[in-house]
Length: 359
Image 1 (cartoon, rainbow, N blue to C red):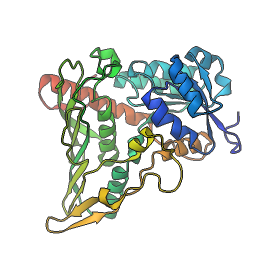
Image 2: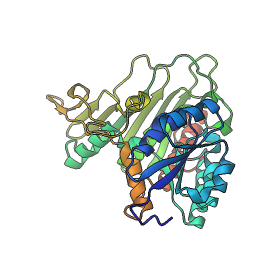
Image 3: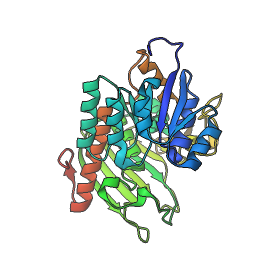
Image 4: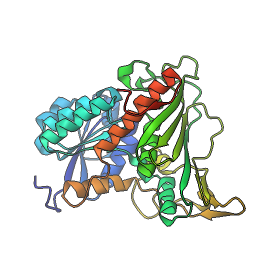
């Protein structure tokens, strides 16, 4: 297929159809002009039936072996499987001649991520991390405020993605074996770290507290990570399954003013509820969800930018047609994984550690 021909649809294979595939990937792929969800790979019969019901005409394959044998019938593979096989599946897709999107975390380690990138370079194919929370409403709003100089020089970035889930649910995300790459640091922590890197650049030091709070927990479920960026900004990041009361989604302190956003982006909830990621009003927030800007004496509401998860696949489609850059660079995922590894070492040794030594 000649991807420079705009009239051709990009045929997408989605590997995995659990919550991530069914609710957060498939609807966005299906809603992207010029893309078609052609195949879902799942060995689970119930999930296969759901895929056919939600996306009439989609092909369901029981194994990735079928997909590699039919690589010529596809233009992109999206991997949303348990973390332990992200890298292996990505390299298999690249060897089959297909571009790849990998849901977070990109790999289990920075070294494994570099291996995936080497294969991509050798095959001259793109491999893209799925860091969709760069298009969170609050993240886009903060970027706008920073561009306007409303906060002045940023001193501290505080961000939270918290939940109240005091009971274990089971499943691979809660298994303690290192090869599973489970726990909240790899899960929601990957998003928070990527947002901090996107906003404030490279990190030189990391301090972390990774706790197991719930009875029987094998993985971290209450996480705090402090980053010192090379430019002097400090990022304080929290994610927890034990937050019966949630702190503000963002609190950003600058020399001139502070921005506080209590409510989180609403796109995840919309996708979970089955709302399509298309149409006017997608990602917009009512005024009661807006953040505030304050100089210590006065507060003013700040209009939220509309959340824009569909932009990831829109930009990806343009890139595959040679019309724009990748929505996310794979090297960004390596930087995030280096921080995750440093955080693990910091928590184990109970000290601040430099980034790049926990390999």
